[in-house]
Image 1: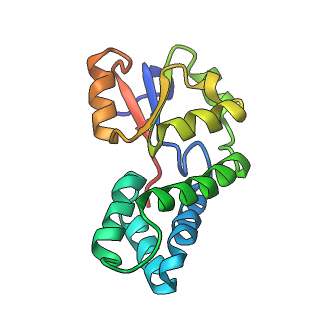
Image 2 (image 1 turned 135 degrees about the horizontal axis):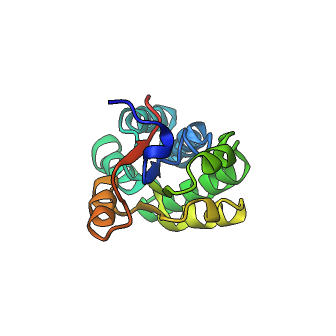
Length: 172
């Protein structure tokens, strides 16, 4: 059954590729963070990232250290996470915001809107505040370390998500 967008009580947005044109930002940040292990290892990380979209950076870097560069000297998990976060923050502050968010708000005045992302929650909250996007997402901005499934289950249980609901995500 087709519904008009105004029929939804909750609109749930992924961030990357939906609200922010940031997919390339994340890919580049994974490459740059892992480059100290060599170009082949950095490419392997990028391939793993692309094949596992929406998965937390914590899980991706743990995989990288345990499966790709096991035993090789190089940056530890905390260092990788820090370098990655610096590149991502810079990119998220400068990438394009999806056109039409304000038009969507006008078309759905009674819908609650929230972000459910694989990105780091604190980072997203900071970037959205700096870019003036926080008020658009009146249901909250949620991300890792919780998974999308954990966030959705919790927010459904506590009533933040009302049905009918629509999850808007970027298909790769």
